[in-house]
Amino acid sequence: MEKNIQQEKDKVKPVFYDPKGRRNIAFISFLCISIVSVSVVFYFFFQSIFSTPEIPNMNTAVQQDNKLVPINQKLSDQQLKKEEFKPITETKDNKNLVNLPKDSKQRKEVYGFYVNWDENSTASLKENIDSLTTLVPEWYHLKADLTIRSEIKPEIVKLAEKNEVKIMPLLTN
Image 1: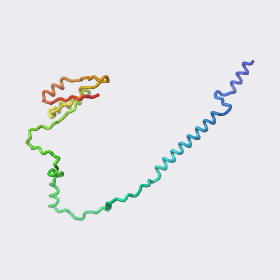
Image 2 (image 1 turned 180 degrees about the vertical axis):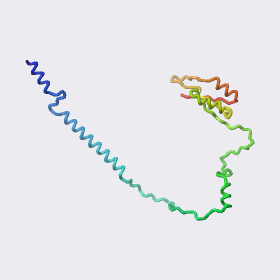
Image 3 (image 1 turned 90 degrees about the vertical axis):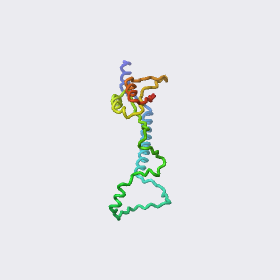
Image 4 (image 1 turned 135 degrees about the horizontal axis):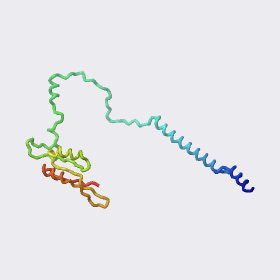
């Protein structure tokens, strides 16, 4: 009999029964703080979007003319021909340029990069090997234990030697 009364009492009480209402107070206070925080964030967000910033007026020393002035003068045929043959860049005054004679026997340095893992790289190398002076293959890899793993392809070495192309391997990690 006592067991039945105890079971009936247990059925009446909910699992998370809180007679003093502490959970309810904590939940409501958390909810209020969250609503106020979100409201403040939204207020500043929309305030920054809809307000115009106050930028101080900076007086520049040079006043620029903002008006567009159309060119009323038409160019003559002689002036147009003169402009047509004018070079785009003037190289006479540029002292940084190196003037090499056109009949110079010195060959330009042309580098080509090659990777083992891409078949297109091999095909491109075979197509363009005659225009290269130096081949930069990705053959050496630095492992985690600071040793070097080598992936040299002998057929690429033979191709480079056959076409007198220098090989400068690249070390990657």
